[in-house]
Length: 246
Image 1 (tube, helix red, strand yellow):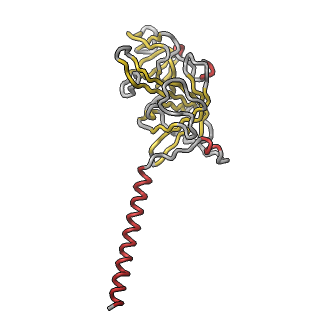
Image 2: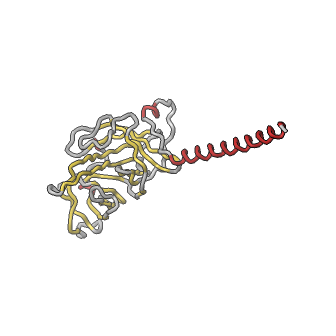
Image 3: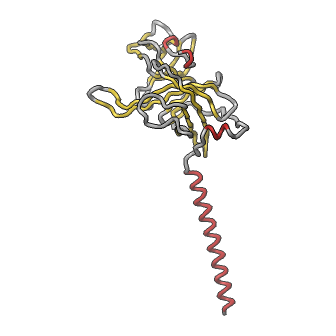
């Protein structure tokens, strides 16, 4: 009788162990697919000794508060961080603002060295950009050697930088800033096709194409990437893609 009971207990424990192991594996797999991308500091990337190749196919688009453009022909990356909050109805403007532009050159590494800048601010800030994917979800990490001027919503100087998850793809190949005090907009790349309205200095535009000194651009109102309008404008009304030439 004792032997029979022992055999039944052994069989029961065997079934229990199998189900427990299967349950643990299920929990582990669920966690691995739902966790956020691992945050890696740019110092860790550099300290690996052998740099790994950058994914050449990372998309242009919206990464939360950062708009990023990737030109696969010139191997350049341009972007803009835009944070607007605390709208004041009396002054008709946002009180908490932090906006800066950055650009860099694609290299055979996990990091892209960038320079951050904004018109009328003499200081250019060095930084590092990491673009990666995990479980088919894209993200970027941006680290700057100094915190930009403006409302400090996030800390770009921490070792891991700031992580922004990829949200929507766009067909931009460059992001540029309006240089002229007033930039006329056109329906066609033709000086006779001028439209009503204009853009002003420091407006952010996203380039969709270029043709003989003309740029076909997408313009988004402040703090709203869901609304957009497309125009032609002259490239001479834009700041250079290289912040050293501003």
